[in-house]
Image 1 (cartoon, rainbow, N blue to C red):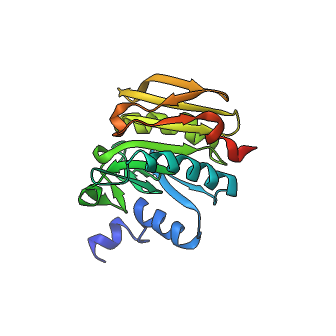
Image 2: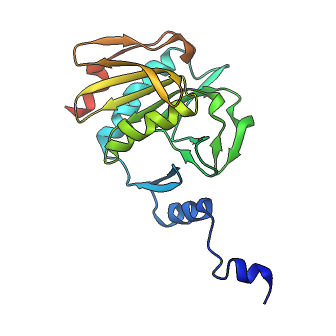
Length: 198
């Protein structure tokens, strides 16, 4: 018997291989590896998609999908927290040359991300508790959370030491501007962002 057969007699897949297998069998589900754990999120509902579209419109109007940056949905973000960790934010603003920064598993270097957005759904706790830590640890400058459950929008900035030091919470009836680090002036209305919830 060879040494390889003794060390791994059952040919167990790596974490990345297991995630890829799950993704291939659960069409439409979002598979991520966060903290060394595979997470699977079922397809989002229609209002979730509407919120993303409502967010994309002002980002596109501000010129964030041109020469220096791109607005993309469901792009892999390589996380520094584990050897195979990656997340798939609902929406991101990235540097225009992000394709040159592919790391693995269709995931890109966190250095090219200017903004990540999560719209809460069945994975509520991950979006509001776990992802702020991993996105801050990755150095993502702006994390925007659309909390459909509690009807608010949170903008987290100033990532340091695995946490965001600034948490701005915006409620219906309010408007707010995204930080300049996104790449262009963008003002959003909470009512417009949450319109699909109604």
